[in-house]
Image (cartoon, rainbow, N blue to C red; front, side):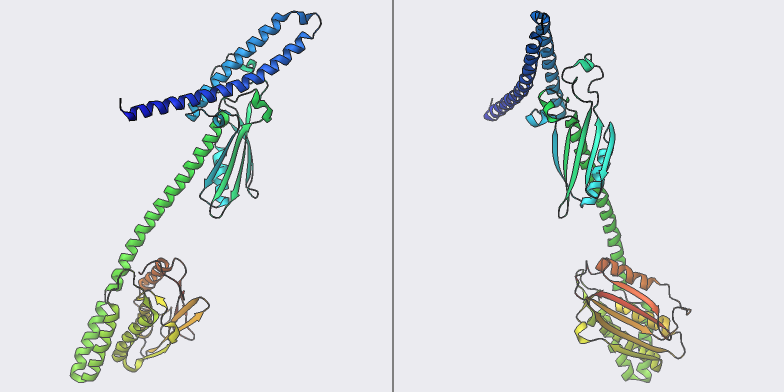
Length: 435
Protein backbone atom coordinates (compact mmCIF):
# COMPACT_ATOMS: atom_id res chain seq x y z
CA UNK A 1 0.00 0.00 0.00
CA UNK A 2 1.41 3.45 -0.94
CA UNK A 3 1.62 6.53 1.27
CA UNK A 4 -1.60 7.97 -0.09
CA UNK A 5 -3.44 4.83 1.00
CA UNK A 6 -1.97 5.11 4.47
CA UNK A 7 -2.98 8.80 4.69
CA UNK A 8 -6.52 7.93 3.62
CA UNK A 9 -6.82 5.14 6.20
CA UNK A 10 -5.32 7.29 8.96
CA UNK A 11 -7.65 10.21 8.06
CA UNK A 12 -10.72 7.97 8.03
CA UNK A 13 -9.68 6.42 11.35
CA UNK A 14 -9.19 9.87 12.90
CA UNK A 15 -12.61 11.00 11.66
CA UNK A 16 -14.21 7.86 13.05
CA UNK A 17 -12.53 8.41 16.42
CA UNK A 18 -13.84 12.00 16.53
CA UNK A 19 -17.36 10.82 15.68
CA UNK A 20 -17.25 8.18 18.43
CA UNK A 21 -15.92 10.72 20.95
CA UNK A 22 -18.69 13.26 20.17
CA UNK A 23 -21.34 10.55 20.31
CA UNK A 24 -20.07 9.33 23.68
CA UNK A 25 -19.91 12.88 24.98
CA UNK A 26 -23.55 13.49 23.99
CA UNK A 27 -24.60 10.13 25.46
CA UNK A 28 -22.73 10.90 28.68
CA UNK A 29 -24.42 14.30 29.01
CA UNK A 30 -27.92 12.81 28.71
CA UNK A 31 -26.97 9.86 30.94
CA UNK A 32 -25.67 12.16 33.71
CA UNK A 33 -28.84 14.26 33.58
CA UNK A 34 -31.09 11.21 33.85
CA UNK A 35 -28.86 9.64 36.51
CA UNK A 36 -29.26 12.70 38.72
CA UNK A 37 -33.02 12.75 38.06
CA UNK A 38 -33.37 9.04 38.91
CA UNK A 39 -31.16 9.51 41.94
CA UNK A 40 -33.52 12.20 43.16
CA UNK A 41 -36.49 9.93 42.45
CA UNK A 42 -34.88 7.07 44.40
CA UNK A 43 -34.12 9.34 47.33
CA UNK A 44 -37.71 10.54 47.45
CA UNK A 45 -38.98 6.97 47.09
CA UNK A 46 -36.84 5.71 49.95
CA UNK A 47 -38.28 8.39 52.14
CA UNK A 48 -41.84 7.04 51.83
CA UNK A 49 -42.87 5.22 55.07
CA UNK A 50 -43.17 1.43 54.83
CA UNK A 51 -43.10 1.40 50.96
CA UNK A 52 -39.63 2.93 50.94
CA UNK A 53 -38.18 -0.23 52.46
CA UNK A 54 -38.97 -2.16 49.29
CA UNK A 55 -35.97 -1.22 47.11
CA UNK A 56 -36.78 -3.56 44.24
CA UNK A 57 -39.52 -1.41 42.58
CA UNK A 58 -37.29 1.69 42.58
CA UNK A 59 -34.28 -0.23 41.26
CA UNK A 60 -36.40 -1.88 38.54
CA UNK A 61 -37.82 1.50 37.54
CA UNK A 62 -34.35 3.08 37.45
CA UNK A 63 -32.85 0.32 35.28
CA UNK A 64 -35.89 0.31 32.96
CA UNK A 65 -35.81 4.04 32.43
CA UNK A 66 -32.03 3.96 32.01
CA UNK A 67 -32.28 1.25 29.35
CA UNK A 68 -35.00 3.15 27.47
CA UNK A 69 -32.99 6.38 27.64
CA UNK A 70 -29.90 4.60 26.35
CA UNK A 71 -31.85 3.05 23.46
CA UNK A 72 -33.53 6.40 22.64
CA UNK A 73 -30.22 8.25 22.58
CA UNK A 74 -28.68 5.65 20.27
CA UNK A 75 -31.69 5.99 17.97
CA UNK A 76 -31.27 9.77 18.00
CA UNK A 77 -27.56 9.48 17.21
CA UNK A 78 -28.24 7.13 14.31
CA UNK A 79 -30.98 9.28 12.81
CA UNK A 80 -28.97 12.50 13.06
CA UNK A 81 -26.12 10.75 11.27
CA UNK A 82 -28.52 9.69 8.52
CA UNK A 83 -29.94 13.23 8.15
CA UNK A 84 -26.74 15.25 8.48
CA UNK A 85 -24.27 12.74 7.05
CA UNK A 86 -22.02 13.32 10.03
CA UNK A 87 -22.18 13.54 13.80
CA UNK A 88 -21.12 16.65 15.66
CA UNK A 89 -22.40 18.41 18.75
CA UNK A 90 -24.26 21.04 16.69
CA UNK A 91 -26.08 18.42 14.63
CA UNK A 92 -26.92 16.34 17.73
CA UNK A 93 -28.56 19.27 19.50
CA UNK A 94 -32.29 19.94 19.53
CA UNK A 95 -31.89 23.58 18.51
CA UNK A 96 -30.43 24.71 15.20
CA UNK A 97 -29.44 28.11 13.88
CA UNK A 98 -28.71 28.97 10.25
CA UNK A 99 -27.38 32.19 8.74
CA UNK A 100 -28.43 32.42 5.09
CA UNK A 101 -27.54 35.18 2.64
CA UNK A 102 -30.23 35.72 -0.02
CA UNK A 103 -28.99 37.79 -3.00
CA UNK A 104 -32.15 39.92 -3.17
CA UNK A 105 -33.27 43.06 -1.42
CA UNK A 106 -34.85 42.57 2.01
CA UNK A 107 -38.49 42.63 0.83
CA UNK A 108 -37.92 40.02 -1.86
CA UNK A 109 -35.85 37.91 0.55
CA UNK A 110 -38.70 38.03 3.10
CA UNK A 111 -41.29 36.91 0.52
CA UNK A 112 -39.05 34.05 -0.57
CA UNK A 113 -38.43 32.98 3.05
CA UNK A 114 -42.13 33.18 3.92
CA UNK A 115 -43.06 30.97 0.96
CA UNK A 116 -40.36 28.43 1.88
CA UNK A 117 -41.61 28.15 5.50
CA UNK A 118 -45.28 27.84 4.49
CA UNK A 119 -44.45 24.83 2.29
CA UNK A 120 -42.79 22.95 5.17
CA UNK A 121 -44.56 19.62 5.92
CA UNK A 122 -46.67 19.74 9.08
CA UNK A 123 -46.77 23.52 9.27
CA UNK A 124 -49.70 24.66 11.40
CA UNK A 125 -49.36 28.33 12.29
CA UNK A 126 -47.43 31.02 10.47
CA UNK A 127 -47.29 34.59 11.74
CA UNK A 128 -45.41 36.88 9.36
CA UNK A 129 -44.81 40.61 9.80
CA UNK A 130 -43.43 42.11 6.60
CA UNK A 131 -42.67 45.52 8.10
CA UNK A 132 -40.47 44.04 10.84
CA UNK A 133 -39.20 41.29 8.48
CA UNK A 134 -39.97 38.58 11.05
CA UNK A 135 -41.71 35.20 10.78
CA UNK A 136 -42.85 32.89 13.61
CA UNK A 137 -44.28 29.46 12.86
CA UNK A 138 -45.33 26.29 14.66
CA UNK A 139 -44.80 22.95 12.98
CA UNK A 140 -46.03 19.57 14.11
CA UNK A 141 -43.25 17.17 14.98
CA UNK A 142 -43.46 14.27 12.50
CA UNK A 143 -43.55 10.64 13.55
CA UNK A 144 -40.03 9.66 12.62
CA UNK A 145 -40.96 6.00 12.53
CA UNK A 146 -44.31 4.57 11.56
CA UNK A 147 -44.36 2.29 14.61
CA UNK A 148 -43.17 3.18 18.08
CA UNK A 149 -44.09 0.57 20.64
CA UNK A 150 -43.39 2.79 23.64
CA UNK A 151 -45.33 5.76 22.32
CA UNK A 152 -45.81 8.34 25.03
CA UNK A 153 -44.16 5.98 27.53
CA UNK A 154 -40.80 6.78 25.99
CA UNK A 155 -39.02 8.74 28.75
CA UNK A 156 -37.23 10.87 26.16
CA UNK A 157 -40.52 12.29 24.88
CA UNK A 158 -43.02 11.74 27.70
CA UNK A 159 -42.38 15.15 29.22
CA UNK A 160 -41.71 16.91 25.95
CA UNK A 161 -43.86 18.51 23.30
CA UNK A 162 -45.06 17.21 19.98
CA UNK A 163 -44.45 20.56 18.26
CA UNK A 164 -41.42 22.45 17.06
CA UNK A 165 -41.20 26.17 16.38
CA UNK A 166 -39.44 28.36 13.84
CA UNK A 167 -38.23 31.92 14.21
CA UNK A 168 -36.84 33.66 11.12
CA UNK A 169 -35.75 37.27 10.69
CA UNK A 170 -34.38 39.14 7.68
CA UNK A 171 -31.72 41.79 8.23
CA UNK A 172 -31.40 44.27 5.33
CA UNK A 173 -27.89 44.77 4.00
CA UNK A 174 -26.60 46.78 1.07
CA UNK A 175 -27.70 44.47 -1.73
CA UNK A 176 -28.89 41.30 0.02
CA UNK A 177 -31.16 40.03 2.77
CA UNK A 178 -29.41 38.21 5.62
CA UNK A 179 -31.70 35.55 7.10
CA UNK A 180 -31.31 34.29 10.68
CA UNK A 181 -33.21 31.01 11.02
CA UNK A 182 -33.83 29.27 14.37
CA UNK A 183 -35.52 25.85 14.60
CA UNK A 184 -36.16 24.46 18.09
CA UNK A 185 -38.64 22.47 20.23
CA UNK A 186 -41.60 24.34 21.66
CA UNK A 187 -40.26 23.90 25.17
CA UNK A 188 -37.58 25.53 27.30
CA UNK A 189 -33.86 24.94 26.82
CA UNK A 190 -33.66 22.98 30.12
CA UNK A 191 -35.31 20.05 28.32
CA UNK A 192 -32.23 19.56 26.13
CA UNK A 193 -30.58 17.75 29.06
CA UNK A 194 -33.29 15.12 29.14
CA UNK A 195 -35.11 15.04 25.80
CA UNK A 196 -34.14 14.52 22.16
CA UNK A 197 -36.09 15.55 19.07
CA UNK A 198 -34.84 12.67 16.86
CA UNK A 199 -33.37 15.17 14.40
CA UNK A 200 -36.69 16.82 13.48
CA UNK A 201 -35.46 20.39 13.99
CA UNK A 202 -32.32 19.58 12.02
CA UNK A 203 -34.61 18.36 9.23
CA UNK A 204 -36.63 21.58 9.38
CA UNK A 205 -33.53 23.77 9.18
CA UNK A 206 -32.12 21.77 6.28
CA UNK A 207 -35.50 21.71 4.48
CA UNK A 208 -35.93 25.49 4.69
CA UNK A 209 -32.34 26.05 3.57
CA UNK A 210 -32.87 23.76 0.58
CA UNK A 211 -36.16 25.46 -0.29
CA UNK A 212 -34.48 28.89 -0.24
CA UNK A 213 -31.58 27.61 -2.34
CA UNK A 214 -33.97 26.06 -4.87
CA UNK A 215 -36.07 29.23 -5.13
CA UNK A 216 -32.99 31.41 -5.58
CA UNK A 217 -31.69 29.00 -8.24
CA UNK A 218 -35.08 29.08 -10.01
CA UNK A 219 -35.05 32.87 -9.95
CA UNK A 220 -31.51 32.94 -11.32
CA UNK A 221 -32.38 30.46 -14.06
CA UNK A 222 -35.39 32.58 -14.99
CA UNK A 223 -33.23 35.70 -15.08
CA UNK A 224 -30.61 33.88 -17.16
CA UNK A 225 -33.22 32.67 -19.65
CA UNK A 226 -34.73 36.16 -19.83
CA UNK A 227 -31.27 37.70 -20.26
CA UNK A 228 -30.39 35.24 -23.03
CA UNK A 229 -33.73 35.90 -24.72
CA UNK A 230 -33.25 39.66 -24.38
CA UNK A 231 -29.67 39.44 -25.65
CA UNK A 232 -30.79 37.40 -28.64
CA UNK A 233 -33.60 39.81 -29.43
CA UNK A 234 -31.22 42.72 -28.98
CA UNK A 235 -28.66 41.19 -31.32
CA UNK A 236 -31.32 40.60 -33.96
CA UNK A 237 -32.63 44.14 -33.55
CA UNK A 238 -29.14 45.63 -33.63
CA UNK A 239 -28.30 43.63 -36.75
CA UNK A 240 -31.46 44.87 -38.44
CA UNK A 241 -30.85 48.47 -37.37
CA UNK A 242 -27.21 48.34 -38.41
CA UNK A 243 -28.36 47.14 -41.81
CA UNK A 244 -30.72 50.10 -42.02
CA UNK A 245 -27.88 52.38 -40.95
CA UNK A 246 -25.44 50.98 -43.50
CA UNK A 247 -27.73 51.16 -46.48
CA UNK A 248 -28.50 54.34 -48.47
CA UNK A 249 -32.07 54.74 -49.62
CA UNK A 250 -31.99 53.61 -53.28
CA UNK A 251 -34.68 56.07 -54.38
CA UNK A 252 -32.91 59.04 -52.81
CA UNK A 253 -29.58 58.05 -54.36
CA UNK A 254 -31.17 57.41 -57.76
CA UNK A 255 -33.11 60.68 -57.78
CA UNK A 256 -30.06 62.67 -56.69
CA UNK A 257 -27.84 61.17 -59.39
CA UNK A 258 -30.57 61.64 -61.99
CA UNK A 259 -30.96 65.29 -60.97
CA UNK A 260 -27.19 65.80 -61.13
CA UNK A 261 -27.10 64.24 -64.59
CA UNK A 262 -29.76 66.67 -65.85
CA UNK A 263 -28.01 69.63 -64.25
CA UNK A 264 -24.72 68.78 -65.93
CA UNK A 265 -26.38 69.79 -69.22
CA UNK A 266 -28.31 72.85 -68.06
CA UNK A 267 -26.44 74.10 -64.99
CA UNK A 268 -23.02 72.42 -64.44
CA UNK A 269 -22.11 74.51 -61.34
CA UNK A 270 -25.29 73.41 -59.55
CA UNK A 271 -24.64 69.81 -60.65
CA UNK A 272 -21.17 70.01 -59.15
CA UNK A 273 -22.62 71.50 -55.98
CA UNK A 274 -25.17 68.67 -55.72
CA UNK A 275 -22.50 66.01 -56.21
CA UNK A 276 -20.37 67.67 -53.54
CA UNK A 277 -23.24 67.51 -51.04
CA UNK A 278 -23.92 63.91 -52.04
CA UNK A 279 -20.28 62.99 -51.38
CA UNK A 280 -20.52 64.70 -47.99
CA UNK A 281 -23.72 62.80 -47.22
CA UNK A 282 -22.25 59.45 -48.27
CA UNK A 283 -19.10 60.08 -46.25
CA UNK A 284 -21.17 60.48 -43.09
CA UNK A 285 -23.32 57.46 -44.02
CA UNK A 286 -20.48 54.93 -44.06
CA UNK A 287 -20.94 52.19 -41.41
CA UNK A 288 -19.05 52.83 -38.18
CA UNK A 289 -17.25 50.36 -35.97
CA UNK A 290 -19.39 48.49 -33.47
CA UNK A 291 -18.51 50.62 -30.42
CA UNK A 292 -18.19 54.01 -32.14
CA UNK A 293 -20.73 56.68 -31.26
CA UNK A 294 -21.49 59.63 -33.46
CA UNK A 295 -21.99 63.21 -32.25
CA UNK A 296 -24.67 65.80 -32.71
CA UNK A 297 -22.26 67.85 -34.80
CA UNK A 298 -21.47 64.99 -37.17
CA UNK A 299 -25.15 64.08 -37.50
CA UNK A 300 -26.01 67.72 -38.17
CA UNK A 301 -23.45 67.86 -41.01
CA UNK A 302 -25.01 64.79 -42.59
CA UNK A 303 -28.51 66.24 -42.24
CA UNK A 304 -27.42 69.58 -43.73
CA UNK A 305 -25.79 67.77 -46.68
CA UNK A 306 -29.09 66.01 -47.27
CA UNK A 307 -31.05 69.25 -46.99
CA UNK A 308 -28.72 71.04 -49.42
CA UNK A 309 -29.36 68.29 -51.96
CA UNK A 310 -33.09 68.60 -51.41
CA UNK A 311 -32.89 72.40 -51.72
CA UNK A 312 -31.29 72.01 -55.13
CA UNK A 313 -34.07 69.61 -56.13
CA UNK A 314 -36.95 71.55 -54.54
CA UNK A 315 -35.60 75.05 -55.06
CA UNK A 316 -37.33 77.85 -53.17
CA UNK A 317 -39.95 75.40 -51.90
CA UNK A 318 -37.57 74.28 -49.14
CA UNK A 319 -36.29 76.56 -46.42
CA UNK A 320 -33.86 75.52 -43.64
CA UNK A 321 -33.20 77.15 -40.28
CA UNK A 322 -30.59 75.75 -37.86
CA UNK A 323 -30.14 76.75 -34.22
CA UNK A 324 -27.62 74.35 -32.64
CA UNK A 325 -25.07 75.89 -30.22
CA UNK A 326 -21.44 74.93 -30.76
CA UNK A 327 -21.21 73.79 -27.14
CA UNK A 328 -23.71 70.99 -27.83
CA UNK A 329 -22.22 69.62 -31.01
CA UNK A 330 -19.92 67.26 -29.09
CA UNK A 331 -22.86 65.47 -27.40
CA UNK A 332 -22.83 61.73 -28.16
CA UNK A 333 -25.67 60.47 -30.33
CA UNK A 334 -26.31 57.23 -32.21
CA UNK A 335 -25.87 57.73 -35.97
CA UNK A 336 -28.74 58.27 -38.45
CA UNK A 337 -31.33 59.26 -35.83
CA UNK A 338 -31.34 62.98 -36.64
CA UNK A 339 -31.23 62.07 -40.34
CA UNK A 340 -34.40 60.00 -39.98
CA UNK A 341 -36.29 62.91 -38.41
CA UNK A 342 -35.10 65.33 -41.09
CA UNK A 343 -36.03 62.94 -43.91
CA UNK A 344 -39.49 62.48 -42.40
CA UNK A 345 -39.99 66.25 -42.22
CA UNK A 346 -39.06 66.73 -45.89
CA UNK A 347 -40.51 63.58 -47.42
CA UNK A 348 -43.81 63.39 -45.53
CA UNK A 349 -44.27 67.03 -44.45
CA UNK A 350 -43.01 69.36 -47.17
CA UNK A 351 -42.65 67.50 -50.48
CA UNK A 352 -46.40 66.72 -50.72
CA UNK A 353 -47.20 70.46 -50.40
CA UNK A 354 -47.17 72.59 -53.54
CA UNK A 355 -45.73 75.55 -51.70
CA UNK A 356 -43.21 73.48 -49.72
CA UNK A 357 -42.18 74.89 -46.35
CA UNK A 358 -39.38 75.19 -43.79
CA UNK A 359 -37.43 72.69 -41.70
CA UNK A 360 -36.15 73.86 -38.31
CA UNK A 361 -33.35 72.07 -36.44
CA UNK A 362 -32.94 73.26 -32.87
CA UNK A 363 -30.94 71.94 -29.89
CA UNK A 364 -31.12 72.99 -26.24
CA UNK A 365 -29.69 71.67 -23.00
CA UNK A 366 -32.06 71.09 -20.06
CA UNK A 367 -30.12 70.18 -16.91
CA UNK A 368 -28.67 66.71 -17.67
CA UNK A 369 -30.44 66.21 -21.02
CA UNK A 370 -30.08 67.58 -24.51
CA UNK A 371 -33.23 68.02 -26.59
CA UNK A 372 -32.89 68.10 -30.38
CA UNK A 373 -36.04 69.18 -32.21
CA UNK A 374 -36.76 68.80 -35.92
CA UNK A 375 -39.89 70.73 -36.88
CA UNK A 376 -41.67 71.56 -40.13
CA UNK A 377 -44.72 73.52 -41.22
CA UNK A 378 -45.91 70.89 -43.66
CA UNK A 379 -48.82 68.47 -43.88
CA UNK A 380 -48.86 67.57 -40.20
CA UNK A 381 -49.86 64.32 -38.51
CA UNK A 382 -53.26 64.27 -40.20
CA UNK A 383 -51.82 64.61 -43.69
CA UNK A 384 -51.97 61.74 -46.17
CA UNK A 385 -48.47 60.48 -46.92
CA UNK A 386 -46.81 57.27 -47.96
CA UNK A 387 -45.10 56.85 -44.58
CA UNK A 388 -45.35 53.56 -42.70
CA UNK A 389 -43.95 54.73 -39.34
CA UNK A 390 -41.05 52.25 -39.49
CA UNK A 391 -38.44 55.03 -39.28
CA UNK A 392 -39.78 56.46 -36.01
CA UNK A 393 -40.30 52.96 -34.60
CA UNK A 394 -36.66 52.12 -35.34
CA UNK A 395 -35.51 55.35 -33.70
CA UNK A 396 -37.42 54.53 -30.51
CA UNK A 397 -36.08 50.97 -30.48
CA UNK A 398 -32.51 52.14 -30.98
CA UNK A 399 -32.89 54.68 -28.16
CA UNK A 400 -34.12 51.92 -25.86
CA UNK A 401 -31.20 49.67 -26.72
CA UNK A 402 -28.55 52.40 -26.61
CA UNK A 403 -29.65 54.27 -23.47
CA UNK A 404 -31.70 51.69 -21.53
CA UNK A 405 -34.70 53.99 -21.07
CA UNK A 406 -32.70 57.18 -20.40
CA UNK A 407 -33.58 58.70 -23.80
CA UNK A 408 -36.88 59.37 -25.56
CA UNK A 409 -38.56 60.52 -28.75
CA UNK A 410 -41.68 62.71 -28.73
CA UNK A 411 -43.65 63.53 -31.88
CA UNK A 412 -46.33 66.24 -31.54
CA UNK A 413 -48.19 68.65 -33.86
CA UNK A 414 -46.34 71.87 -34.63
CA UNK A 415 -48.09 75.23 -34.36
CA UNK A 416 -49.69 76.47 -36.57
CA UNK A 417 -48.96 73.59 -38.97
CA UNK A 418 -46.67 70.63 -39.38
CA UNK A 419 -44.94 68.26 -36.96
CA UNK A 420 -42.29 68.69 -34.26
CA UNK A 421 -40.18 65.66 -33.36
CA UNK A 422 -37.95 66.02 -30.25
CA UNK A 423 -35.11 63.63 -29.55
CA UNK A 424 -33.96 63.78 -25.90
CA UNK A 425 -30.66 62.13 -24.93
CA UNK A 426 -28.45 62.39 -21.82
CA UNK A 427 -25.90 65.17 -22.09
CA UNK A 428 -23.16 62.98 -20.58
CA UNK A 429 -24.11 59.34 -20.93
CA UNK A 430 -22.20 56.33 -22.14
CA UNK A 431 -24.58 54.35 -24.30
CA UNK A 432 -24.96 50.59 -23.80
CA UNK A 433 -23.56 50.08 -27.27
CA UNK A 434 -23.60 51.87 -30.57
CA UNK A 435 -26.59 50.74 -32.56
